[in-house]
Image (cartoon, rainbow, N blue to C red; front, side):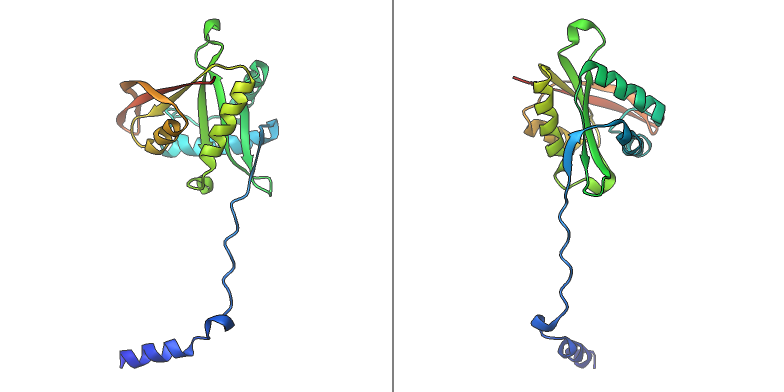
Length: 194
């Protein structure tokens, strides 16, 4: 009897040309621009998601809006690139920035990069777009070397993306961080911005 019910159900369907069409999935749209002070609450939320839920950052305490405002002002003063990806409705989908690799003046042309995406923006190709824009802006700013410090566990996609942009591994440090009751190391990667 089950076969007859299936046949009945099949016959009850309208022919394809008469069926209601499913709405097409809307494309993932965004624009890239320099970060503005008004973006910082979004940036904070994106970053704090990773603080609370992953080992891609070794921060264990969420950053406050005040801390983000201070960081933003510091990077602005230094002329360091800080960019955001923005949806057509104005939502910040992700961000990328560079900050000084070390505080000593001799390091002033070497920076460390950071790219973070909102949870709904991952897996859509936005990371590489932000990386390219960050590299371009860093070159325009006269920076010469870019360093990536990547967790050695759980960040395989980040390592692969950096490799795709010409970063090479320059070293590893084992068991230098402790988060979520486990030891973590880092992979150091570098790219010359020539």
